[in-house]
Length: 386
Image (cartoon, rainbow, N blue to C red; front, side, top):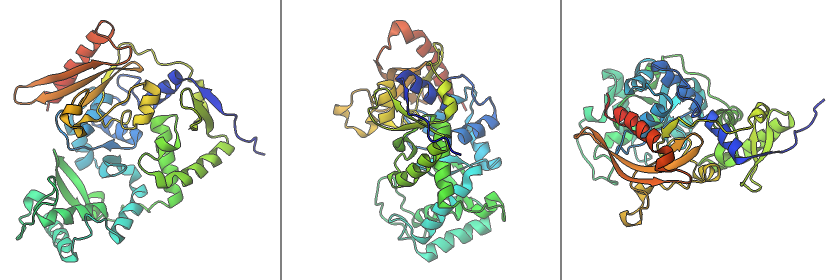
């Protein structure tokens, strides 16, 4: 006989921060170990690592992994993608690296895109699509640089290509016929998905119910304490199904409803074992310079609630309206956001440039200066390394 749901618990903000930091593996120095296998482990735990094109400093996917793997090398991600095939690129809330073990949860989305392509790729003709697929089948993996189109077209956007084949490659990628097997900066190399993953190894597509279970479990693993907004980040249509799933788990007592200090009546949920988390971590010597696309930062309202820091991505703000700088990085010291530093890598001059530095909250030069300077030294070495 069911004992019914647990009573709603009240969670202090400090405890909520501790739960989130532990779930993000930012509460210990080397949570995933070292070497190529650490990259796989990090992506599998986080669920996805966002890719972004901006390279004022090292691109976000490498930055996010370095934050959690101090000995991280870019070659490790390349090995995971191209050789080990333990991660692949696909769309979550943005283009991301996701674990290959989770491929089945993305197959229905690929099938839907093949049946109904989006407006950007809908204009690709069957002839164009067949041509690029046949060429890759015949010649092996190709990038857009390997293809010389007979006719070029005017760019519709600054970041678009004049080659019609680029859109054909992208459409075949999104509908699952092609997979990105290598990446040099933003130059992508495509291969047939069946050849990359192995003919006959394609898993059975997940059902809608299984996908919702996956989305909820991914959030619980990487966030610890979850809300509908945090689970369904930029995916609002999924909320009713996720809420029904949460209610079922609450009835079964595998989730505990919670109210977080300062969040008003916003509902949160957590695993019962997390009720043992009572204090914030004592991490006085642990400093992380975070990417604006780090999972801890991209959910802005949650970051503001639990850390008292409103992050604005000012690369999209006109210069005269910027407050902290074009590419500001929040600095996490222990369980506090203590600074916001606008950085730029001078690759020719082999140095990291500090454009602006602002102290946040209780952050100060006296309290945090030495440890941040040391973290910046490590970060500079990473920027300029292989």
